[in-house]
Length: 344
Picture 1 (cartoon, rainbow, N blue to C red):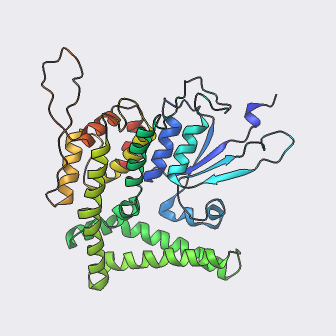
Picture 2: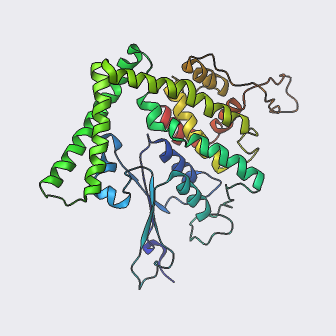
Picture 3: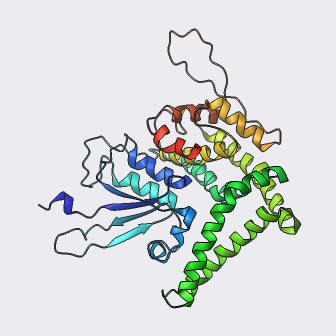
């Protein structure tokens, strides 16, 4: 029997500020899954310095995104064979893999004795609801980076956003310039495809910096146009679609599922960008988002939560389903350690 300490571990490359990294962290740390503390190597990637675009990281994940999960392949874990690894970079696939890798029927050599129920939907109907919610929050129009970079619709908010984003963008620009220079000087040998990838990233940063620094011109007009499309059309559309699908209090009812993990990671980001806080109640958080949209948009308050106690004298009031969902996630142990970090 092999020594468990000698078995190669999966490695989760992540950044605490990354929206989809928090989704991966939640699966690893949630009590429902029961992963042991020693089952993963967690390695922070500093995206503010462009580390996910480095030659070393791109060999793991050519798309240069976090989270990235590197897992040893089954059949290559024996003492007499060379361990082979697979990198999983798609956030939806990553969360699904983490869920399926430890369940009541999985064969993983976990160090935890927790029951490890599957977080995946148990019925076709639930799978349909879950898929709609997950696909909605992962749509390109409301991608976390887009929401952050285009969170300004007038000159005043543009200047405020520039104060936090310009230093980060400049740091990333410098990192890419170094990678390109090292490649041109043959200090490192990279493919033309990788060089084109870096150039594309650099050009996008240059465009954003010109808008944030100058605040005017045609590029600024294009920026404000996309910002309004994002926050006044795309975000309300996703909120409406997701709110409609929630069964309550979690997305699929009383039990946590993978849809909750994806939705919570995305929603905390939206609330943060809307001026919200992890201390906000569900009603307060959703109201801040509605005001931030600045279009008169409001989610329907059509959900009547069950009373916390049969003895309570408080009368239940109708609330939006997303507000009820927020409070359900806020009551979890992982809220402070994982999701609130995204609201800091």
